[in-house]
Length: 146
Image (cartoon, rainbow, N blue to C red):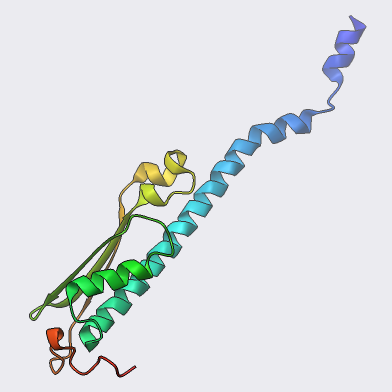
């Protein structure tokens, strides 16, 4: 009987149990922070590439929508996410560049991340008005001016 009472009063190892109980919460918070940071950085990169592609189209450095999509896709190829790139040139609305990626494809830990449960698509859309003196299909003098 005395051995049982001694065992019940002994508190050695209690911090280990608390530590083990808290580990899953800390790991979940860390993965949320990493996934959110990845989402933010990828969206920033997508915005920069979309803006650069639209600027090149309006200035006449890129001469067709297919060339613009290829330029944007090659600029986004640093990360191996399945991006969707689309461009549109309309004389009335201007140049539109849209780059999108699915959130589930970007997650570090896959389908276990709370951010993938929210799902959705991250989209960066840039619209610019072209210079009226630079016709789109001719290059407008922007080509080769470095």
